[in-house]
Structures are given as structure tokens and as C-alpha cells.
Amino acid sequence: MNATMPTFSKLDNLKFFRTLNTRVNSYFKDNKIEKTGNWKLYLKTIILFSVFLAPYFVIITLPNLHFGIFFLLSILIGIGMAGIGMNVMHDGNHGSYSNKSWVNKFMGGSIYILAGNVYNWQVQHNVLHHTYTNIHGHDEDLDAGRIIRFTQEAKWERFHKFQHYYSVFLYGLLTFNWCLTTDFKQMKNYLKRKLSYGEPKSPKILWTTLVITKVIYFSVWIVLPMVFGVIWWKVLIGFFVMHYTAGLILSVVFQLAHIIDDTTNPIPNEVGEVENTWAIHQLFTTVNFAPKSWLINWYTGGLNHQVEHHLFPNISHIHYGKIADIVKQTAKECNLPYHEYKTMTSAVIAHFRHLKDLGQKPLLSA
Image (cartoon, rainbow, N blue to C red; front, side, top):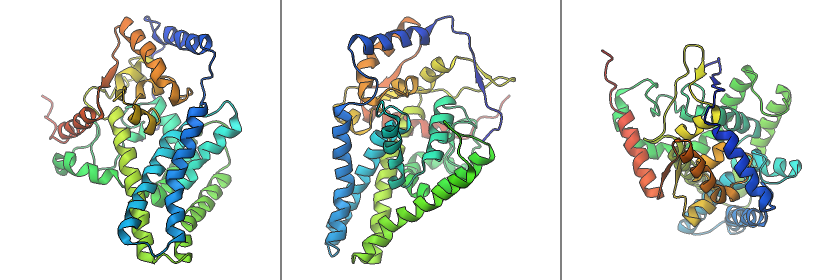
């Protein structure tokens, strides 16, 4: 990752974001509603936590379950895990779950039972991804090491020719890597770079929190089931299946929004400035998918309305469907892009087609 952070142009002759912000604020004021979550989000929280935790309690109270049932319950836990991450944890750490800060902090803290860490997530997601979206060397969501090439700027390797085939199998390792290595590497890196989100905390507190929460996490998901009589190999398989399911879901949802043909990867100029303002930059680097699907919108926490989310990360996802027409119309008036795929299937096809293109050997410059 590059040490010098890019800056964005302050010149907005179109007055895009000023106009959009005024219209969105008017929508909430005219309809007398809060920008944060409401009973719909609270009900969803109960449902998703039930999907996540109920199978776990079944497993530890019935340790001799048939392996097939155990396997399916592990998948169900993974589905609940991803759902909580996209809906509850995500809104909480963006401060949009509730108008009460302690509620946001509590819900954002649900990441600890999902194998993650609040500090790392807020720096990577809120600071790096939301600020420097799709900028190579700054948005860590584009960094998959050497194994997958997400941008033209990344170094090409011969095996990338096959990445549109093998990448989907690696996507499932996302949260598994979180709990084992990623959090420790990120914390070391972020503290070295003195990155923070909100009020900075001392490294000692952050490292202590990380170690303690990891110990509790592995105790709950690996040690405790064994204590209740679940044989060790079933516990390890279930743990992996849970993570693989959640990781696959989260990775696919994340990639559809940014790693796709329609988006761009802007390169800062020689003085480190990006061509567009931050808001306009989001329109060029972000894509919506399946915007009319109730189920996908409900389960992904509105992450299928990624354009709205990137422009208004502090508004709860339950409102994105309503403000999408405002965003689309304002972008149209300013002759700016508003990318969306009508279905999730079409977005998935476009994503892997884009990976195939990125996997081809770059042509040498003349």
C-alpha cells in the first residue's frame, strides 16, 4: 500500500453532490423519518441472529447429530454470519444502525463474534475503501496478494489466465483468513501508519482487545463444542464450512460492486490528485445490482445499492431503495454515470468476465 494518500478535486461545476445532498435531506425531512434504522432493521437483526445462533445451540446440545445434518447446520450458521455482517455490523460501524451512539457501538461490536476486529474493519472499510474507492495501492479491497489480479496496475502472473476459474474457490477463505492471520497483519500495518477512525486508541488497548477477543472467539466456536461432546474432527469441519459459506457470500457481494467492467480504477496525477471530486468518483467506481429484488436487498443489507451506500454511508441501508431514484435522477441531470445490473446473475457473469480480461497478459506499451 502506498504511504502518500491521494486528494480529490474540489472543483464541481455540476454541483452534483450539493444538489443531491439537498434533495436527499429534503426526502427525510418531508417524510419526517430518521436516516437511521427502524423496526424493520431491528426485526431483521433478531431473525439473522436466530439463523446464526440457533444451529450452534442445536449442535452443542445434540453432539451426536448425523454428519449430514451437522454439515447443513454449519452452512446455515455461515449464512447467518454473513447476514449479520452485511446488515447489523455494517450499519453499526457506519453509525447508521441507530441515532444512539452506544447502540451503534454495540451492534458494530458484533464483528467480534464474526471473527473480525472493529478497529481493523473501520480503518480498512470506512477510511481506506470508502475514501479511496478502487484506487490501486490505497483501497485494500483490491489487494488479493499475488493470487488474484483485480486491476490493470497489479503485477501480472502467468496463472492469472485462469483466475476466473479458481477465484471463486478462494473467495470462501475471506473470513477464515480474518480469524487466523489478517487481523494481526492489519493491526500491525495500520498502527505503523498511524491510521484510525474516530477517536484514536492506544496500541496497547488495541492489541489487548484483539488477543482477548480472539481467545474468546476460538473458545466459543472450537473449544466449547468439544466440551459438550462434539467430536474434534466434526468441530473443525463445521468451523471451516461455516467460514467458507460466509466468506463466499461476502466476497461475491463485495466484488460485484467494484470489480466489474463498468467501474474504473482512477490513477492520481503527478501531484497525487484524483480527477474528480470524491462524490463523482464514487459514481465511476461503484455499481448496483438487482436493485428491485426484495430478497437480495433484504439479505445483503442494501449492499446491492452500493452507489447509494458509498454516497451516503451514514444513512441506514433500509432507506437506499427509496433514495435510489433521487440519486439516479440527479446523476442523469449532471450527465454522470449511474451503473446498475438488473439482476444478480448478470452482475456475477460480468464480474467473472472482467476477471478473465484482467487475467490476460498485458500488451507491451509501444
